[in-house]
Image (tube, rainbow, N blue to C red; front, top):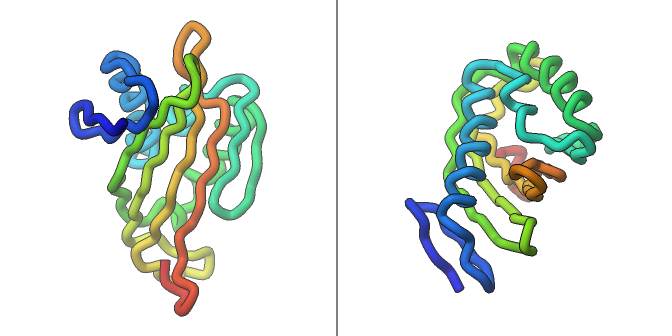
Length: 154
C-alpha cells in the first residue's frame, strides 16, 4: 500500500498515522535546518543515546553526544559547509509497531573538497530508523553518497 500524507510518500502494510508522519517529518526538518544554520545541537537533537551514525565517508559515531561532537567539528569546516542543500524526496516506511524507516534524498550544490575543488551537485541518500519509546528518536542513520561510475561527478 502506498499513501500520501501532505506530500510525503509512505509505503507500508499498515497505514502510518498522520500524527506520527508529521512528528517524524518535523525531526527531519530540524536536521535540514541545522545544516543551514550550522547548529550541531539541533542536528543531534533527535538521536537516541545509543544511536548508530555513519556518514557518506564511513565515519561512524555511536550515541547522541558523540554525534553532536562530530557534527560540531564538521560544521566548522568551511569547505563542507559551502553551498546549499535541498531535500528532494522523503519516504516513510513502517517496519514495526514502533519503528519507521525514513529515506530522504538530498542535493547539495556548491560544496567543496578539502583542497578547494568544486564537487558539483552532490547527491546523498539518508536512511534513518526512528524508534518510538515515549517519542520518536533516531536509532540508526546511514548516509550514502551517489557517484557516477563513469566520471568523478556526484
